[in-house]
Length: 567
Image (cartoon, rainbow, N blue to C red):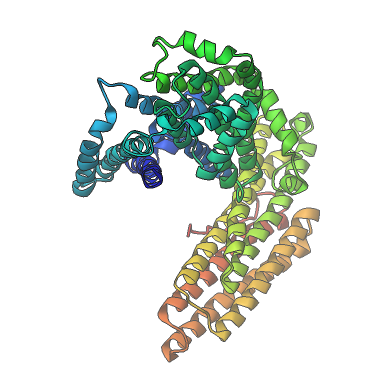
């Protein structure tokens, strides 16, 4: 029994993973694009979440994808709420598939070996990613049902015949009749195995094999609290996935938990009163028996999620407000997003422009921080600093979008000639700062290559990198001072820094090639070092554009921005 249960559960999970991975192979980036496109309102979000979860057989996987999209800035918290509602409906499809085990005329597990064989051949012989992905989906489907069959055999006549164990039956019924205890048990087991689909499949099989006795109305009633607890337990996967993500991603995971906890809390009294199980029997078109008990549990699972979704849809704003209360905006979060771009100042364009300048100064600080983290990660082989650099680049992207949108809207107002002339210069400044963030990511990628291949710089290369870093830090400081108080002298000092950086680029390239020729460093470390130097030089070019804009009084006249090629 133990071996069949463990093996069956393993095959069940392997099947789910292969189906999910196969779908990603077959669909490529279309899955994410669909989520991005079709979540513009809560209804389409629910439909999209339901369909995706039906395909990949896991609400946790859909929620984790959603968390990734939020973390990448492709979805907002409000958009994600609809997807979460749909994911909870879509995950019930697994219970319906497992229910076919009780249908004598058509037992889908009989076809599992055919699916495994044909799926493997398609994956092996497929020439395209789509064909191989389709093979993995079919193979995963077969393994999933083979796992179900093994778990069923574990508790049937061929294994530990649970229907004949009166003690086990009494124990399970006793737990099930204590709704809170059964709910906690379902929650705990699901948290351990991290899949409500797997736990509910086990619950259905146990019920079918007589683990809760043969009074089928009683069986249904005592199984429902386990099922409700499982819906709470499944949220642990999303919570774990959100640990190292943005604050909004954590809120999305918390929204998933709130949905299931609140739903369970108002369903439990219905269970105590005997209402829920009677409604399930009334809704189901099949007579309650051993052959239909798994179907009735699938109905109960679906009913909980559908009713809960209908209850939450009208109060999405309240739901979001609860999540924001549980995970309020922090000072750090405020520092990472534009907060003073007030549109009511459009009637006073000069003040609106000042607000935009303040946010540009904050954006410059974030760009500097991203570059610093990337360089430190490169020189110290510190992957955590590289992650911070990437996060900093995401912040600069957010600033660019917000400030650009604000300035474009401001340009539609009636503006004085001075404000009209400053607007395009500020837009170019924002773009320069965003490109600096991109170069920070370039340096992070160079660092990852260095760490992965276990390459180290020579003492001379480290000393040169330190000089270059000091120069670019000074240039950032001069630019910040120039932007903050329109300090032309600071801007001119920044141009001196840029001249030094250009000279260093030439000198350091020459000296590094010489070290390579003399055998003091390898060709690969030399290429990485030169890539680093070139990226810093390009950052200097973008900062030069900003310095020249300040010197020109934020007017185009007399300014010749440097055209920095993308890298």
